[in-house]
Image 1 (cartoon, chains in turn orange, green):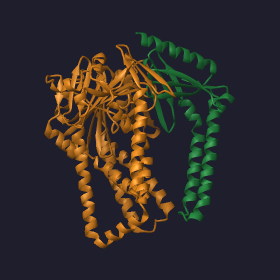
Image 2 (image 1 turned 90 degrees about the vertical axis):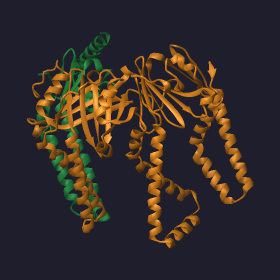
Image 3 (image 1 turned 45 degrees about the vertical axis):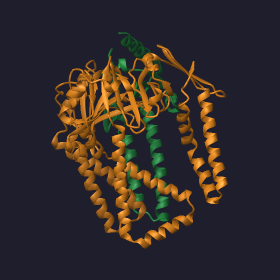
Image 4 (image 1 turned 45 degrees about the horizontal axis):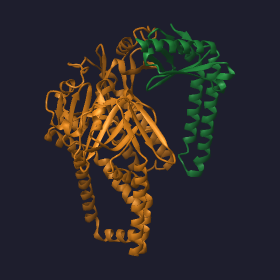
Length: 474
Length: 153
């Protein structure tokens, strides 16, 4: 059994700070308010000491062992926990390397199995020497960048810029900024806040609007830089039945997954990217945290021109069909039903809101509700136009539209867990909904296309379960 | 085609429909109580009463039709479950995807001496509402045996 590299105390400290940060912040702001600098110094010193003490404690009692067959991890002294992970159960291996880890030849490892326990990886090794990777048969971060051949792909700068510009990631950032303002309200004394508010009011509307625009631009810039940081020098390569992706500027992040463990491929576009004809390709795997906190799906290619997406990914995943199988669309004469369903669903909620808030007299609300429903109906119609499905001998292709975007799935027949055909009783002679279930992370990904022609639904059933003749469907 | 469930299952659906009626009536009562106090839209109570009657009646009347449609079918390669009435649902689960089979019986099923069978795959679960306990045991053994064979191949 060996200990982690001492640099991992830093990683442990960061984790402790995340857990205790809020308590620390309250202590700090309280001491600041008292205005006694010696108290503040003692508080800061105490907080650093506590953090370091816990981190060193955790580091000291953390031991691991990697053999060709198993990975063993032992944690804690008071509550001792030992876990063993058999090598063949591993679904994905993730490496992260902060820029300050690089000169020390140390990296962080996260190992995922398909076990069901929680959303955290089964094994996290915050600082191990690069040499252990040889035992796990994955290339190190430094090795992989140089490889340039047919089995590797590297993102190009203009694609990445387009991708970062069309990210809709500004919305969560704005939400975070507003949340922070809300929190400030609790943390800072009331007098500061009222003073600031009074000053803002004096400055007038122009400045407030200006500030708003500034905030928006700032949010856009952050989301742009974050996407660039995340996918900086993104590479994908194949080494003996493993797909390895690598990305990141401040922290190099490498994920490897066996090709056979991929459950499905997902091609997604938001409306902006649909206009620019660029696509993101992801792999659904049977383990969680395959990528990172933001999206748990393994990104195989962050951005690529839509026409070359299939041929490019085929170089890495051999079951990708070329050309794509013929698909059946949602018939145009039934597309209005998508819009109707969305409008009805929204109308019920709006109706309830009207009834409960008592705002049904004011015309302005009726106007807003009308505009909302028109937009909802438009989105429903958009989704209907995107809906399609088709099969080849060994795989199924399906496309679904959703809020401001569309997603296309390629699913090998052998990875489909179950199929459901649903028939609305009044439309049972014409249409059917087809539901495909595929494993995704620790849960289920439903791929559902509504109002497909009945004959097509029958052919899906025949294709998936030929041993089950179905009188009601046939 | 396939197997029907024992006729007794209809009693359980009847009781569940009555339970639904009670729950919906309770919610309607609450709405009726709150409408004058919180100045909600006065017709909301009428709408709630109407919905309660329509939903409960729909559930009660559809029981015999639902029974005729609820079936399951087993081949050596796959299991099919049919259910529903307003939306007819056909589920297909290949034997090789089955991870485990669970038999359960809540108080209603125990009262009628029936057993529900739940089949789980790596990501979904599928339930046969209620069958004779002996048949359920047979079905479970058969499914697990076939699944084992499918895995060995």
